[in-house]
Image 1 (tube, rainbow, N blue to C red):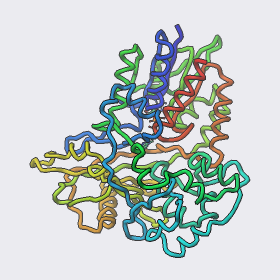
Image 2: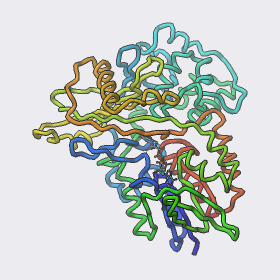
Image 3: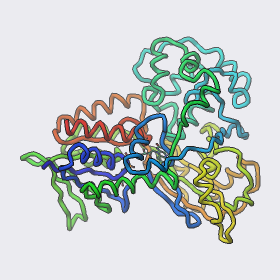
Image 4: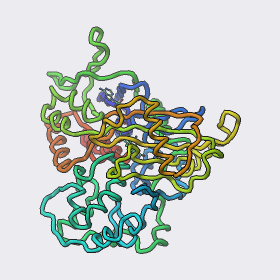
Length: 468
Ligand SMILES: Cc1cc2nc3c(=O)[nH]c(=O)nc-3n(C[C@H](O)[C@H](O)[C@H](O)COP(=O)(O)OP(=O)(O)OC[C@H]3O[C@@H](n4cnc5c(N)ncnc54)[C@H](O)[C@@H]3O)c2cc1C
């Protein structure tokens, strides 16, 4: 019987544990999670007595991995999709529709950007400069800016990417975030024509495609809890409140991890270990057993953010005719994005019915703050963060906001690994270094992408390597 330790109980660690017991039902698996619950970035907060997502809220439904894990967790019947309300970009003081026929913000037809961009900026984008990229990776800004102009990067591409990475276009890797467009650029093909080829030929074709996003009715935070329950049924032990401090390779093979307070440590031993941790703790734990992988993971920067969720009396706030908005960093606002959760998700609207203090309907709005290397915006007390969010939300909506009935602030320190230029090479080198330590693998948001499906993929790959 082979024994396994899975370190980290986010979606990556839970997936890895599940993969292990599926591949080997006799395996002895112990999952150690430092926090007081499993889920990591999938987490609920309570507002007005309702449980709402205050971390990840949806999975990309056009990749199978996220939905497959929802299925495995037994929640397949509860998959729901957004209402179809469309998003806006709050740029230069106005809310603009997100232009159609774009691929991560890169347009097929620059004319569709009119309004969001000035006529000169549209003309600049329409005159794409013919360039060939020689490098195997460049930043998103270096890929798109010289071809279509900086305005496309700043007012469209960066806000869309910022919604995922909270990152800067000057730093993010095009090979990770826009691989199809980088391939085209390396082949000397124009971006506009490439996007036109990648997108469905017409709006009707686009409408016929399955929805882009999905979640679980009641919130994506239900996924980790349901996965952990499944794991328990399969004999996996999940121990929360167990922060791992040390990882050692044992002379005769296998590993030992140390948890608990220094004066009273607890050691666990296993034949094999999966590190499903954010890059900073993974780097710390690997210092002794895999110093090169440790150093490489230590180079992965992270962005901190905060999610402020507000509950308003629906009648007082008035109708919201969009799913939310994104904000270009160049406009200097604190708010990065906002989701009008009750307009975007029917299940959230349902939660709000009769949830007010006097039985009135509530509506929920989520506001995201914090961009990579701009941590100072977060270094204010919660009430000040809420005040700034309310002020900017009111300005964006151009209305006097009523006082919220309830509010919740979730801080996410160092939560989003930045996939910077050269990331693919760095992660390949991490995997190579770990391969030199048989029985040890890593996965998580620092590897193949920060989205839930990418984390699931990284866990599948790690377990495949481990179990050969
Ligand atoms: C605000 C926010 C919104 C997001 N929205 C979306 C979204 O809508 N859709 C989407 O696809 N993705 C979204 N993401 C990204 C996605 O949620 C994460 O990248 C993903 O959940 C990371 O999973 P993970 O298991 O790799 O890491 P984590 O979720 O970080 O899990 C790692 C776990 O390891 C534990 N841990 C850390 N150190 C130790 C230690 N020493 N010992 C033991 N345990 C330890 C942590 O407590 C944590 O539970 C969002 C992220 C954030 C921050």
